[in-house]
Image (tube, rainbow, N blue to C red; front, side, top):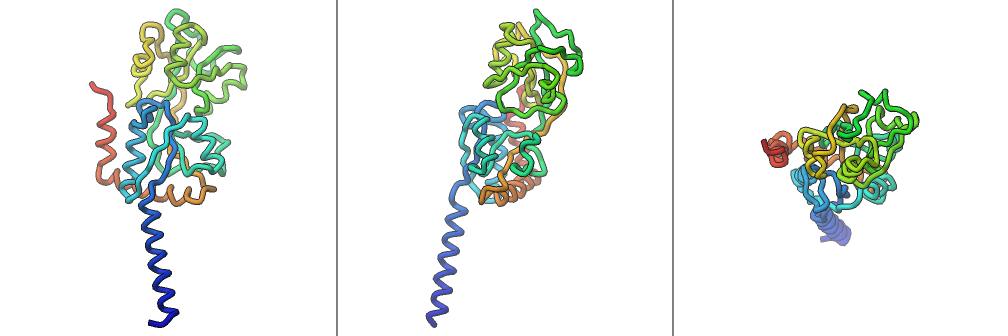
Length: 252
C-alpha cells in the first residue's frame, strides 16, 4: 500500500470514529423547571418525554438539564445552549431562535380571579389602569396579554403559576394569568396550588403554541433542529406521540 493511500485510509478511519463518537455523545438540551405537568422540577413531564423520544427516534440521546426558565431562555438566546423548552414566540427572538414547524403543545392562557373580590372586567379590553395581574417571570404571553402593561396594567412577576394563584387567594393581586391546556387544565392549577376554595376562572386570552427553541448561532443548533424535526415526524408516524400524551392525560 502506498504511503498516500495509507494516509487516506487512516484519515478515513479517524473521521469515522470521530463521527461515531459524536453520535454516541448525549446532546444537552435545557428545559425549564416549573411548567407542570409538561416539565417538572424533577426532570419528568409530557414535553420532556416528547423531546427525548423525538431525538431517540433518530438515534440521539437527549440529556435534559433542568434550570429556571429565565436562565434556559437567556442561554439559548446567547447561543450558550443548543436549545431550550418550553418557549413561545416573541419579537426579541427574531434572528436568535429557530422553532420547528410543529409545536410541542398549545396552551390557552386563562385569567383567574379571587371569588371574594371578582373582576369587573369581562375581557382584556376592559381591564382598568392599575390592575395587578400575576404572571410567571420570563414567560412569553400572546400579544393581547403582553401589551397590557402599555395600558397601565401592572404585571406582578412570580416564580410559577402556583405562587401567583396563592397570591391571588391572599388578595395581593387582582388576577392571575395561568397557562391551560387539555393536559394542564385550569382545575389542575387550582388544585395543585391548594386554593380551589378561594379562586375561580374568568375568561381566556389568545391561544399560544409552545415549542422547543434552537439557537441558529450555536454550532449544533440548526443540525439539532433538523434532527428533532425528523424524530418528531417518526414518533408521529409510529404513534409513539399518542402513547406519551395518554400517559400524561388527566385521569377521568
